[in-house]
Length: 619
Image (cartoon, rainbow, N blue to C red):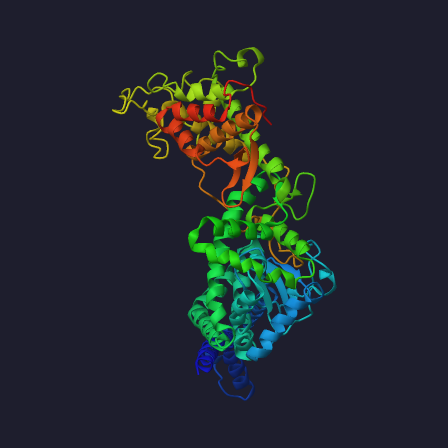
């Protein structure tokens, strides 16, 4: 049978891994065995003579040193804490129906039930071995417990691995779909229970943890030298068993998949489509919606519920996803939890830590935000902060207020000031209408550039289309080479300003702990390197200028035309005019940036009744 074949392959590879361990032990015992033979020969009046005496004097201390080194390496491997995924523990009291479904699946598959269930803010599910003694006591500094999780969040020395479930699955999938997706995962507890596979996995994980311990920064030169040797030997052993370990895991996966075929096989095909859809919606929700809030010190407390809203919106827009909306009438998998809101909040906070590096708990500078508050608390504030940064850079460049408006008298910022500056071609080779003078000219950030004239470059000629050429010093930047002089200069200055702001620690950012000589044994995962999975969407200088110009337009629309901030579940912050989303602003902004032509944008503003000459309120 396929199951037996996969299990046999896994066990054979596990034995190969264990043979590597046995060979390493044999190498460590070989000098001691030779020394014992030499000493026994001397005690029995054999192996006598100067040569044998010299051999005994040499081999005995060598054997002792090798044994001590082997014991030290074995101690480091045994005591090193294997890596553990950061999760939200869910105890049986908090999800009795979920535990009942998992145990029923295990009974049907004839495999041991997982020892516990935990959630991860990701679109994946797996089994995780937490039998190491360092994983048994709950850490003091982590508090993601929910609905009684402190009672039995960790069992002492669990026999079976822990089932880790992606939290978006519980909200988007129906109960039957979740059951079908988890069947092959739970089936993996069968091969995992085999003693040889368990021992091989423990050996490989111990070596991996020992390499991590040896790589940790240390101040003591003696311990650093000793652990460097331990790390080299551990890496050598890992190289020797890496191939066998990979084949062992493939065999375990094949055996689990084959065993699970008899359980909900037809539904699993449909459920796998939902896995891909959930992953796409989760990724867009994090990068388009959650990330802007995290950067402002706010964290959405219902991310999993937001996945449902995002995917429902995708189902409405995408004709290929029309059938997915009908599923929403079925029972969602989150009904298997006693307190879904508490679980969602804990998973949302953990997601903020993993993907952005936020603090471990709420605070005055790191507070949760509900979806109903998101437009006012995040979108409006983000736009006004970007608009304020835009005018701050213009002030530093010495750009004058727009003529013919109330701004010269009041000093208030206006959209007309930005439009006039970006449509002014300026002198060839200069950075805008003022030659980029002022404090910002001395920017030293990553995007700071000099835009003044250079004697080694001839003044660029105007393009055939009439577009003002980009500044010579910016021609090497592929992203800015297709923009005008004022746009390229302003984009570079905005990038430098933003780089300076991000280099300054914000109150909402976690304070990194100083490296310690030894890792904290109570910590389940190293949170000194947060975020573990940083979100890094592309933010080029052109994108930053477009974002800031869009923010300024939105602020003018809100202050002069009664528009309101809104939330689009797939695209993030959006502007609402008369309750309708404006989807045609981006092309007008790009035309202004690339061609220096503000006519399409001015026509758009006029059609919506937006007054660019009126002052706007900044953050």
